[in-house]
Length: 556
Image (cartoon, rainbow, N blue to C red):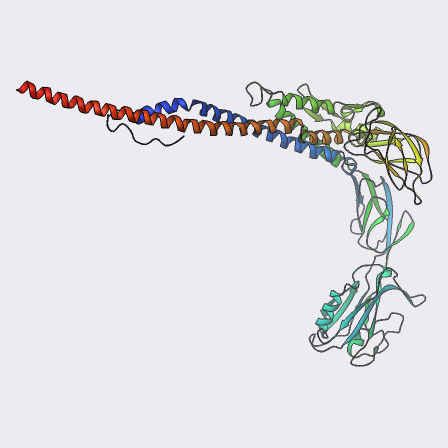
């Protein structure tokens, strides 16, 4: 609405006040629009809070459907000065007695000292070959998976410092450093990895200051462990440490590994060997109940937060009290969480100590959870995670997608996979897509449910009718998918916020039209009152003139 300029000068009337009063009345629809805008923005803010709470629940649902979180294993060592350990979810519970006789080491050698690290040292080529030295047969066997690396030493890098940098830049499986031993600077060369087959030898060629094996110039770096140690032999460096594997036993089974961090000796268990042992060290692997409860309590908190937000908005005089969306969201959430799984004996949240109060608040009974896990260690997976069971031992469940629905689907393989063939067949009567020996359910019309995205492997060479695969979508995945759909196009939250934003846009259009109309009304009022002002001023002048004339006549 435009600015009102001064009026009423001629007549003395408060025309500005009159116009202001009239325009205030005309602007009533504009104020109603602003009230509507405030109301819509408040609703959008509340929906933002609800969405954030759902995002928190989705995160908790994703976490609780992950087997690593459902079955966190812990590993404890009886003596962490010698061995520490950690376990992943697929580590088998049990006790392991471990003894360490050797720690893995990296090969390390030192070159004779020099008094000036920046003085000329020699030129030529250093060839680093990684491999294993066997003292019994006095042999060096190159590592077939590692290619020898040549390092050129020329006028640009022919000092001790330059050689160190050239070696470190070469990515040859070794690293070099300079150590001052009190009498001078020594080049120390060490394998970058531990393990007996990652030792090294150093060949020198093209030495410009003498032969390739004498004790002058670049040949001072020559190192061949099969030769007798000593000046000018081709084994001219000092061996500080031999390359070796870690040697240890697990329950009396002898094991040798390149590294002191062992991840592939016991499935799911990482061992950190810190010292050789003087006696057995016991490592125990078991379910970390405290982590399980922590994960479940995070889920409980996330659920109660969104449930509280939805309940608050259903109270009388709440911002969204007149809308059905909060109650529909609460009902949808409750319907998912109150499910039971008939495939596993009608188990549900109550089976693991998760129960709802009369007001809908979720809580965890930890004693009941402990009892449930003791009776069925897999119960959490059955309730929260996606699971698949097959009736034929030649078929193994692999996974599913958000489109896959719970159900039992018949398997018919028309062409076996593997050995260069691509598997072909149907799942639930619908053609699947194959890759090697893995078949994935395709899009189509199923008699019941939807097996799209359900994948499984079949033993190579096996075909025909292979029974059924039963898929159960866990509560964690169901919640993830449902919340995701709420925010997608057409989803309940998306549709509601899109509708409110659309109303805001329409209010903006109405406001623009109203402001144009008010500007026109104001201009009309101003024109009318300006004319009235002029007329009244004229009439006042006429009245004054007549009064003067009459007064003059009376004096005469």
